[in-house]
Amino acid sequence: MQQPPCPQCPRGYDTLAHLMALDPGLSFFRRFTVLNTKNLLYLQAELSLAEASLKDIVHEDQESGSQTKKAYPYSVEALLESYNVEGDSANAAQWSKVLEVRKMLKEHNEALLQHTQLLRLSSPERSDLAMFQEWLDAQEAREGTFLRPRHQWRDDGNTNDLVALRSRFEGTDLLTRWMFTKLVPWYHQRFGVRNSTLSNHAVHAWIYDDRTVRRTSYFISLVTAGVLPASSIIVLLYLKKTTIRMVFVIVYNLAFVLIMGWMVKARRADLLAVSTAFAAVQVAMIATNDSG
Image (cartoon, rainbow, N blue to C red; front, side, top):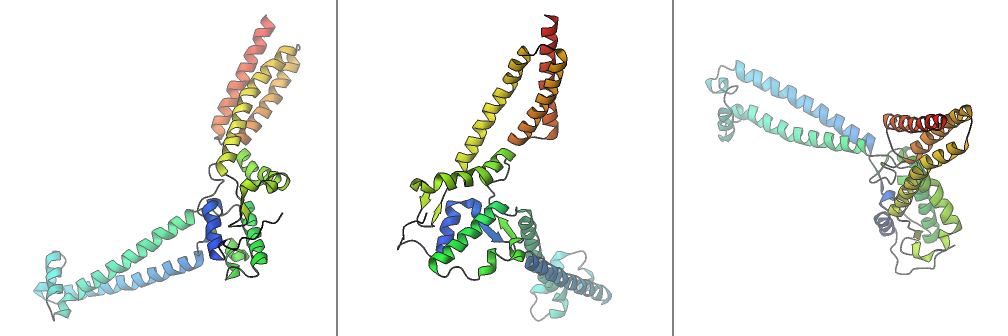
């Protein structure tokens, strides 16, 4: 289903900026890992040379026999005074090099910290990246030409270098992830594509609210967590043989743990504790019924 033309809609990079603003989960940018790493290596090499040069200057000052220079290791004031005296470049060499190294250190440390932060950013989810590339192709077909250079989000080398500024999957459980990657596309193909309220003509896309998906997933988790234990108790009431009951407890506990692991983002220890408590309740109920 094509959307009607929009003469006043943004074009090119303006369209892409609007899309990323509407759906931050599609904010994909390159981290330029190779260039940043190469820059850090150059800064490190440059600093290493400056460090060696500073050591040579310090050694020369100590061996010079000058009373003024002999005070340098013990007095920053003497170093500052040597630097502030006009025309005394020989005595000011050490502090001049210190100031040069200070600037280089600042640049190196800032680049190092920035690169560290970039490496911590998550890569785009394959489903989101595929959807984003599909949108780029559609825009290019619609406008005849589109963003240049084209390879920013397409080449294998570049796609592996992309980061997502805000991943919609961060901190989500498997159920929510499944809803984003499978259920929402399925719904869109059958129903959402005909829903004009979800359509945004400015970016030629249908925008789904991530919060709605998360709330739906949360509601399903709550209902399931409430129904599963109760349904187990109801079934146990109708099972008469102890052997069948024990087999049911094992099978039901296995299903319970798998479902909870899929619907809840929990640690293994938490799942083990919940499973143990759930099994204990079932066994206690069996023992009570048998004694009754």
